[in-house]
Image: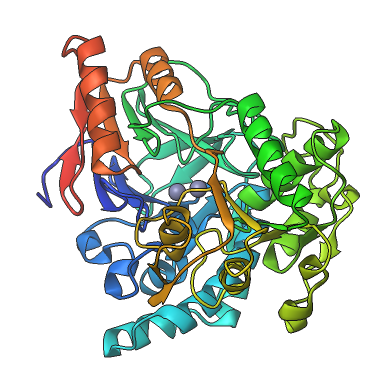
Length: 460
Ligand SMILES: [Zn+2]
Ligand SMILES: [Zn+2]
């Protein structure tokens, strides 16, 4: 459909009916805007990157980044190598976190990517100097502060505003206004308070087009903060009473800090004993950075610093002799999905041999990940963990501690916004279809809903 004249047109280049290499191209009055450029959490070949072939013949002027999770920024070096002149915009915190996250992506890519010729070309872009450069060229904007995006043709002035999306520190939803029309992209959003950060603060006015994330679109029920804390406390008490330690595998950005505060609150409320807490690695770097923004970035408890919570460093060089194998402790380690060679993976191998130890899962597990296999395993029954047949003796527990909007809250937001066109993204097929069906019924068919296909152009 290239060449079709239309005021506003978009293509999804990743993250259509899945949580993938999230990336969208918008053409607004001839100005080209890309929102996010992610790396697929699962694929380790060229499908790991956004489908840039679909950008052929498209205008490209600006890149807007919603937040610093790898599925939204991990493909940036790949995009910028091909399109180096994009004006880049994000929030100050996302710019700073991106720098840490992209450096980590370099190691991830080098360890896990398949070595085809095409992939070698792609990964050669993940060079530390390029990563350093990326974080210096971002133009940053505070929440609520509007700025203009001017296309190369100088034709169209688009007004852009970031709004706090409540998903992780620095995360933003985006409003674009042009020629009397408005577009709202939610980014990844959380519409309930977590432990560190408050819920999203989105404007609730009508828009012409709404891009909405649907991660939890098919959830049957959701857990409240109180019920999550009770479940975690019960498990931690059971394990520590048996003289065991608790391992919590967490994403380094967002989930680690939320978990740390939740555990601290459990201790302060006397719901669990003051066991030593072990943290470290990239998540500690991120926590230190977030502490620098403890007054300027939205917080439930402004000024509180993560470093005020007593923590011990995970001894990476001598894991098997670590103190948590002698004294009941809580260990928060990445990766969240226990990918091979990561700290949580190495620790899980040892945890599984100890009947009095416990592993607490509190984050999303990709169905092919080692973490998914372990969290769904039965004690003393063999299962495949990162390619190895294994049995576990330790206890395993899963709690739902999502940093994404709950289904009911997604519906409420859509009903308040009343978009003329709703584009559903960032969710598995089941989630997207659930939200689409219920929304269509609510509006009695008086809404256009698009479940986009990757690479297809849609006029809106
Ligand atoms: Zn995210
Ligand atoms: Zn995401």
